Image (cartoon, rainbow, N blue to C red; front, side, top):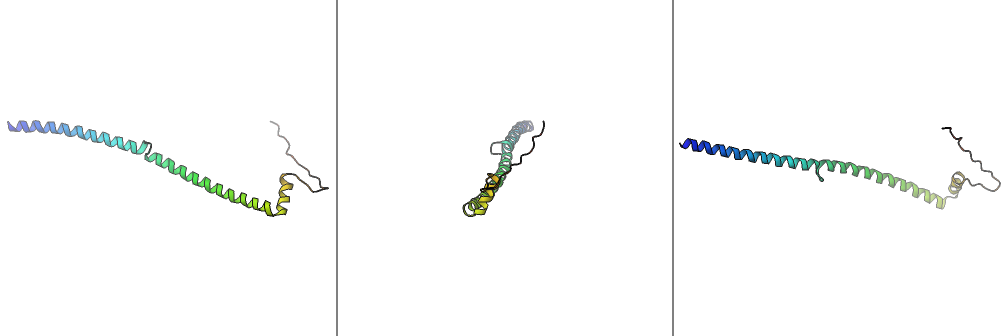
Length: 110
């Protein structure tokens, strides 16, 4: 008779173990999902990392543009020949007695 009781106990222990194992698997799957898909998940990390690289590239491009603009400002403050060149090319200015011709592109038919 003792053998039947032991077998009976082992079946109930196995059922309890299987419930625990299903519970642990479920919790593990939830943790994996949160790790990959959550607000602070791995995919979000990769997305933010790419965005950071793009922002750094834009900052570098803007710094380069800022240096070029600062160089042009310095030229406009100090170099009279450059001022004259800009005035002639962009503002269509001329010295006394000179004529300025503006050539425009012909309009295309649509």
